[in-house]
Length: 624
Image (cartoon, rainbow, N blue to C red; front, side):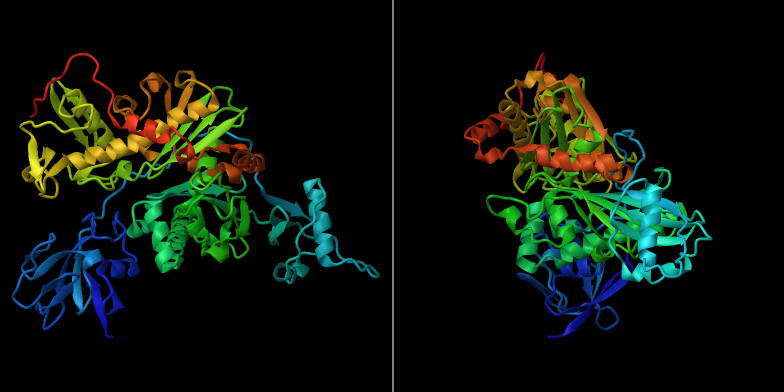
């Protein structure tokens, strides 16, 4: 079996692959940011690329694709393949490499709107990471006490408490220079681990926190001496190349092994760590503690744990407990002895990110009956207060992240992010201004809510025929922008299937709200405040969410966006030892409700699929 070179023109990268490798696999191997919401099943059509073979001065010879063959002078037809000037547009997941070839990817370099701001909850700065200045007395003649023991005694005196520190031969081999009783040394430690001993020169001591979401990753750099936030950055999660949702990625890991998924997210965090340090003018070796939160599947894949137990009943995690590990063992090139803190998870699909949200919103001390919803690729809900909390997870799907939507995209330049009905006409805004390229989650909710008000969509979700109705693959769709008025020269529209995806997602979340209230023994009306976490919740219009029935109408005035609360929780776990301990209690004491096990879940879910009836006068179906 031969090997061929694939050259990616825009990215200026080349990679050698074995014959028969799919183009999508080659893109993953080259480290490209690939959007493949369907996980490479050939269904979503979002991994398109232009290909031509690199033979005889770039003259096309032949290109083999799964189920399609292009020979010299011929065209590929069917299944969405097109040919222009020797370039063939293909689905990367369905295209097998059989020649050296050139590739023009369709992935645009855009600035995604990834939320990094959180609740801004204040806490006492008292981290687990300690920086102590000590003077270690030299050994006197006749003493049998070791240098390590004298260092530990000096540390206990500086801390004002008795601790047993784990001996570290590598560190101990260099402490002789500091154990003379004449100089003050700086010792950096986490719990029972001494990480470094050096001259007291006030060099940087840094901490980093990461929120690993299904779609995006947010990173924060903190000053270990003051708690000040020094830098923030965000990136897309490279695992999107293996599927839009956790189930697709878990299944890929079970079929192919999880090494690729673990490696790519670890590499992404390590590169982000380098970016954060560069932004702060620091070195990665100055980072001594790192915290990570993520949903249970992201947690397991990052740690290299098989997600098998998450995709098979009874859907439980392999590890729930909080972890303190060596950062280097997980691909994070910080200080050689830096520690990695991984917050605990609650249940199979209620993970450490939810614990971070609870920490950021101070749910352990909350008096009011509070509903916390983290709406992303998955929907996690927690209802309760300081006395009792119940959590559940809903299979909301990735619709609110733009996946499984015909013209869906993430929040980036060109995305329709908001819309409203005015005098029977639809108005919308585009991120960055100009012509639209697609629809992001907040825009999707606004569009459906507006079209409901205009009577273009009825309560059952059926799209009515209007002058803006077009046919896409023989099925009705609502035209938002024709090719001449779109950014990419292709129409932007909302299909009947897209509306059904919204109904499935909102129905699952709404059913979860009602069933949590039922389990808590209260009416929905008794909920006093609703915290909406995550990027979608932050940019979402609460009125639109209530209009489509995603959140009960009675709670409209109680909604409070709390931003990236998961990332805020990851920071709090570093900034405060008390907060880190609280995370453990929140995970342990929060009850878990398995919705599908409830007798009336299916009935409630079906009831919530319909949209609420329109209130007041019909606005009409006129369009521009």
